[in-house]
Length: 145
Length: 217
Image (cartoon, rainbow over all chains, first blue to last red; front, side, top):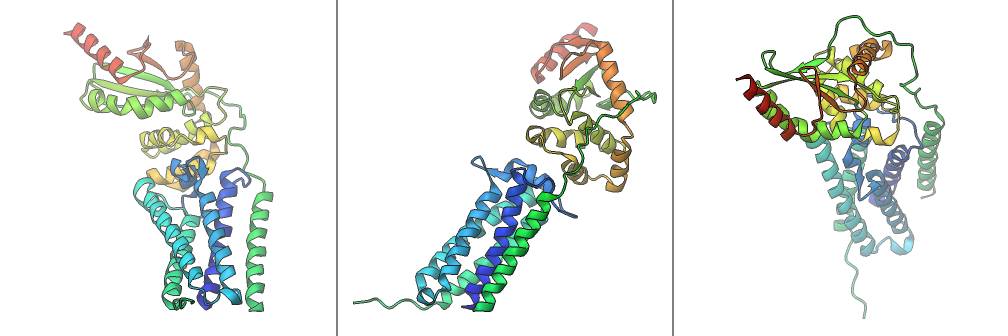
């Protein structure tokens, strides 16, 4: 239960981060608050879009899905449901893989780091570890006759 | 459990509030605000690449916001650098010719000059052309150019001081006036040893170098 709560909380923060980056990308926000990073460089690169859509939008969609599944998994009828744990782990694994790809682009192609992307990467990595732990901890549902 | 939902609501309110606050903040002033510019009298004739002893010198009049200039810089120029400039056959001179229809090209030229002050002109030139998406978005590129400057390794305090004072605006204006006097009508335009040439590919320049060097032999 505590893992699912942590997942829900973290994915809500991740949703805020991804939405912030997406709003910047579509021009709603004038300038990113970046401090010491190279957010503008990363966000202006061609890797900030995938199939014509901002990468941040995919991130927001992923976090929203994880948030919704996690929130549903907190309801009493789904607390012991292994399908929720499986779905969380599957979504988080896709998100984690996407995060690895984007971090690799930042480090090895752009040679620039965006602190918001680092924050998102840290959140998604933690969510993935929690979801794997949740999957291992949730007992299998006994087959019904 | 109730406490957990209160915490979730608090996170949502804080996150949403921060985004709302960011959206309300005025964007930075457009860096291309018109300023009265007096052409520089420092005798600066543009950044060059290649051996001073090269028989031929190409002067390129270019605009950082121009898509044709970006295409030339990213597709043709690497071949010219490798096969003609690095081999000592050609020397290249870059002159700014920001077109008035381009909102941020003069600002980009200024950024390149400020990086050039610290010995990083060509690195900044390459960044501005290679990551040319800024020219399509129409967004204020101030922070992006600063990121480029950081990435090419310039001292940002000096860069900021240079940009804020528009230290090399006069140089850019002088370059524009020089181009207009030479008959530049669009970008990129090329002059070989001072004479205009209608060339636009690395093969064109190779053929030109071959023909002119043969004539001299």
